[in-house]
Image 1 (spheres, rainbow, N blue to C red):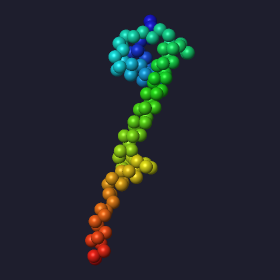
Image 2 (cartoon, one colour):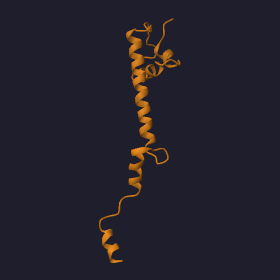
Image 3 (cartoon, one colour):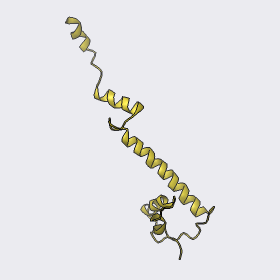
Image 4 (cartoon, rainbow, N blue to C red):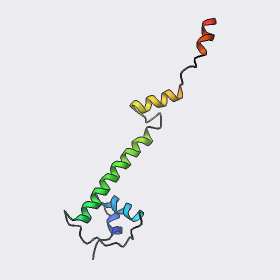
Length: 99
């Protein structure tokens, strides 16, 4: 019995994310993956794709978390705080000097 994209996507292997993404991209679930031996082109492509997909998902998670005051850190937090507390307009200093 040959391994299919569907079986690979359902597994706990590092390539499962890549297989799931290939299914979402339009490849048939029943696509057979005959050459999953270490060093094969199919396995290398699936593993590479899954690693890159994991990196992108992690980066998107960080971007999402930086949009909230509770979870933002560093420069993202500074940008959020500056947006919440805008600097006073230039005209304000004229009223302050009049007392």
